[in-house]
Length: 114
Ligand code: 5GP
Ligand code: ZN
Image 1 (tube, helix red, strand yellow):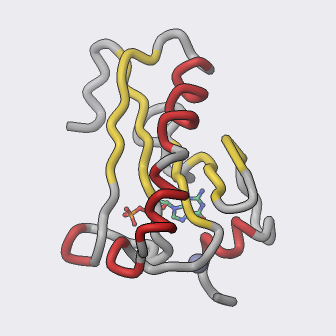
Image 2: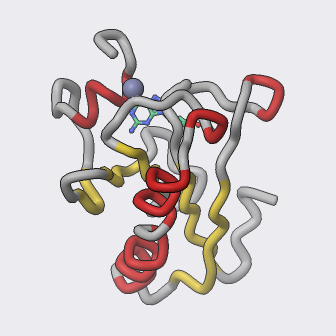
Image 3: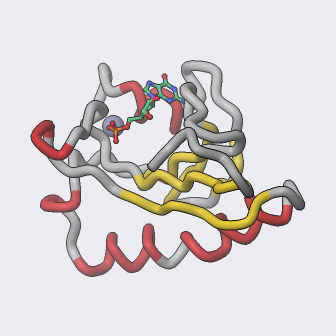
């Protein structure tokens, strides 16, 4: 997808801060940090949303979550928890139509994201 911003990030055509990468997925810091360390996990293959996943792609993407979540948590001892979420469709507040999973670290007494 030539004009997809996350495909451009996968191809390193625009600046990004990599958190994790392998042959099939990439995780990078969200440009708008809801909390410090807010990370997006994407399949390298362009799919718009969860409705375009098959079981293999789901296994590929979702199986990476624990490893990435633990790496984020290990990067900052102040992280006490994490919200992990995935918006599908404009009605569900998806704004970038290359499927992605938000990993949002939570800190004691942070109140920036309910
Ligand atoms: P959504 O609303 O689709 O669930 O989340 C899209 C996310 O992509 C938002 O949190 C937004 O800040 C992030 N985002 C949009 N454009 C860019 C970009 O160019 N680089 C990065 N790293 N994140 C982006
Ligand atoms: Zn894309």
